[in-house]
Length: 152
Image 1 (cartoon, rainbow, N blue to C red):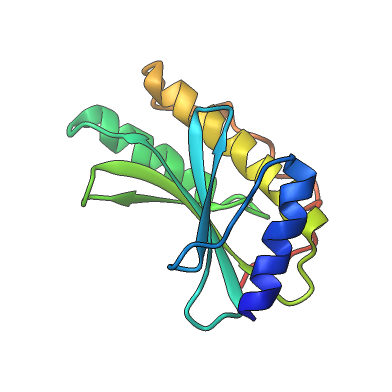
Image 2: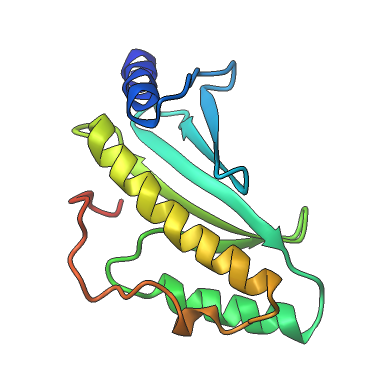
């Protein structure tokens, strides 16, 4: 499966017109618009690709509570683009999604990465502006998924 992942990254390199390589951890980091690093990583079972990003730090207090409450509401949209989480290791809001590698084309992955970036940068920007209620601005989820990738 590592070859499939490497092949996907090679094809993505052509789509994004950049050189993408698998590192020793079976991962690759994309930097979108010099604003948001997004990591793509093959999981240990080699059946899933993890796409994830640290969005921004959340300082302790009421603001963090409000952002996390908004993120929880976003997580229950159907179908969700990705899942929000909080890591206390570095006090950051994260966004991630596992995608099954079987049947995943570079085109579908590129489309997913575009939607992932759109959601991630919206949240990052609004939180940095001090808006804790980002869910009200978020991408509507009542439209069908353009990716046809079932949630695991």
